[in-house]
Length: 128
Image 1 (cartoon, rainbow, N blue to C red):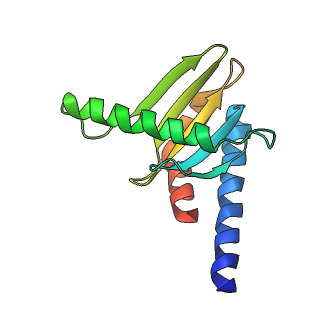
Image 2 (cartoon, one colour):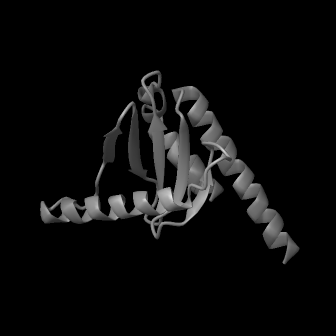
């Protein structure tokens, strides 16, 4: 059992490194990696707030957008973008079971990350 825990710990560490790399490159305020059922897997926003509820709300938005897309015959959604005051939230599917939520500000440069999205997405999937 300790081997499973050790493997999980190493995967969690790898995921955090990938999130940190994307956050730094894009000058984001933070990133959440979540399960489609609303469970928070990892985040690099800050330790002062519990982001479990936020991850669950983002999962609900993701599922609603997917349902909306199906209404129009779209099977795969791209990005979900919500502007909230001086920050923007972008939700993107990672796999059929996971998604990422990016919290960006005015100083952020999303193109630096999304131009390399396939590479980052594959890294996350491999680590998870």
